[in-house]
Image (cartoon, rainbow, N blue to C red; front, side, top):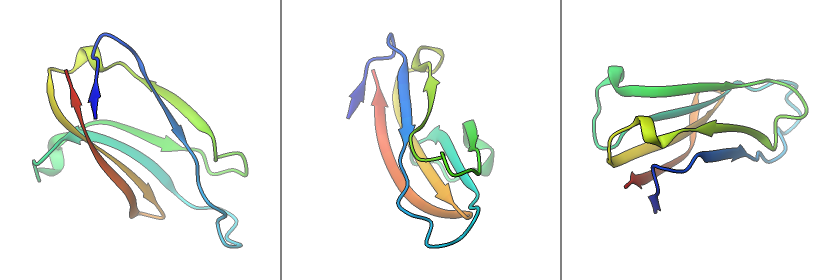
Length: 89
């Protein structure tokens, strides 16, 4: 999964039903891959808690980051839901 750093990256989040819970905390985190340091977070986006959360979009400008491996994590109720590593080239 290589991403061209000269193009903007659009992140679109889609969540399954929240199983009757009214609100769930959702957060997107971008950091360098394979580094466990908690201060390694480069970008953090809190996703609004409302009924229209699925399909929420925002942009990342990879050009401001150096080439290399980055990890994208999506949390729901402070639990990791999805984790993916991308290479910004």
